[in-house]
Amino acid sequence: MSEHELMGLLEIEFEEVGPTRVTGSIAADERHHQPWGVVHGGMLCTLLDSAAGCAVHTRLEAGVGMSSIEIKVSFLSAVKAGGGTLEVEGRALRVGRQVAFAEAHARAGDGKLVAHATTSIALARP
Image 1: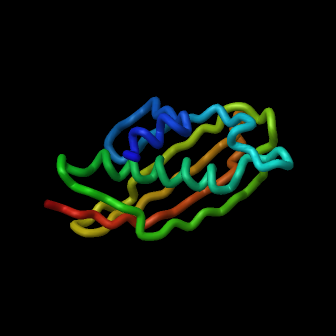
Image 2 (image 1 turned 60 degrees about the vertical axis):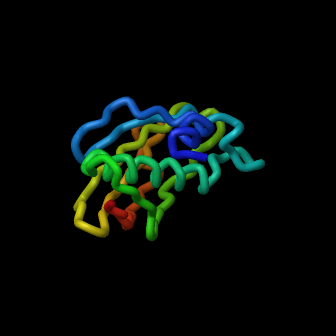
């Protein structure tokens, strides 16, 4: 499965893509929830990882591959069922020759920060 197919499967939509920054959203519904009615942490992690990775991708030339080396996620607040759309922002902090560093934030529909991530990404240049 390609990154593009994963975005479609999760229904992540990136609305704004610019140098070093992307913003997007996902309509969190029951498919993304734990049995007890909160968004699954793995779903939030995937959303943050995708936003951070896409932000780094805005700085890469064609043909450069990339893969997350590590990601640290802080879950700040539960996102309950019926919480609506989750907004995400990814930002490339530094893009080197072999490694890039990025961060991402997820906010609930009311603007409340619900999760934050920092990541290191390996770059594979041709």
